[in-house]
Image 1 (tube, rainbow, N blue to C red):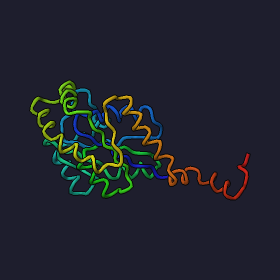
Image 2: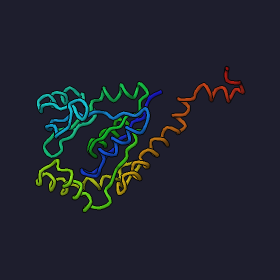
Image 3: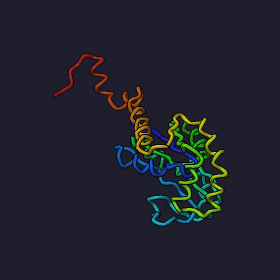
Image 4: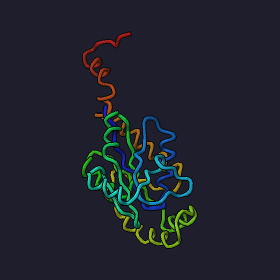
Length: 209
């Protein structure tokens, strides 16, 4: 059985990373694809766990070799997703999350049209500013850059299959889980998962003891 590909995207500071982290901790058979980036690690980030940190030259070589499923330049840094890694996990029957920006999300949708795109929105611009300021990960200039680009980012929600408003963390998390669970009950997934059971039901045969 092949896995499903979930794309989770949002404007910077919307709480996407925290939601994905908790989603992974509370949902079975689900993993996140670890992106490559040229930006330096933030305090507490570990290479190979949070990102694959790399140089600009190495990143551009990977672009030329066609190794990325998607990539984008965001505020002077490059981010990209290994195509081979994603395909290997999907073929192993693992559901994969891509936590990427909207530009990368649209690139992936062109290659995987059946991928499920989920867009997380903030409840207000004021809450977005507060989150960016309180997480203390970026300089004031970078925060202002992110806020200036937030309207453009937010406007891309129209391309998504699902939209989640992260006003209350637990509610948003429950809604994300509901999307994952619903996908796992679709006809295609259930036919793959319970092929033998369905055949027995249709034939009228009893399951072996």
